[in-house]
Length: 207
Image 1 (cartoon, helix red, strand yellow):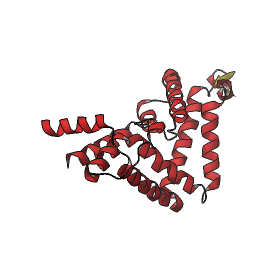
Image 2 (image 1 turned 180 degrees about the horizontal axis):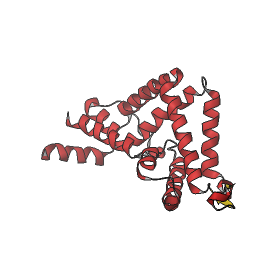
Image 3 (image 1 turned 45 degrees about the vertical axis):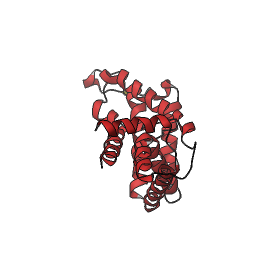
Image 4 (image 1 turned 90 degrees about the horizontal axis):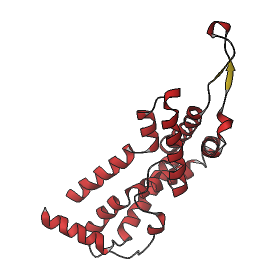
């Protein structure tokens, strides 16, 4: 029971630490937060390049994900251990499975979200510098309304649109089920390193 409680706690922490949640809850879209928003965009770019396009950090490198697959001697210990150890990888796998599945039903939204994400993360900064003409009562001239916050807003739009495709499209919901099945199969067959097994054994003795 303690092992499954640890799984729930780890997954909850991963979900609450996702890029979208932290950006919306901790940042205000005004000029005072440009430095913070620039860091947020850089973080999302780094996560995406690492293989975490939904902004949920990986728990282990993907290169370590498919190693050492074999039938377990103690599946009741291995499965919750792997669900904890690979939590970030599993969440990304489930969401990516759902997104790719939803693309067959909602291709336009999928294409818009992918394009928005690419532009937000890879377009040059000057592309987001937008100026509008002000009324005379506001002092006239031009005012900048773009910049970093516009880039971050575009990235957030792409994230929200992708999540909507995952959870509100029937094909996306099937993708969630498929991804969950893949996660359980991997958690069942992925052997644990001896260091992890030793740490878990020591923890069980102390408890």
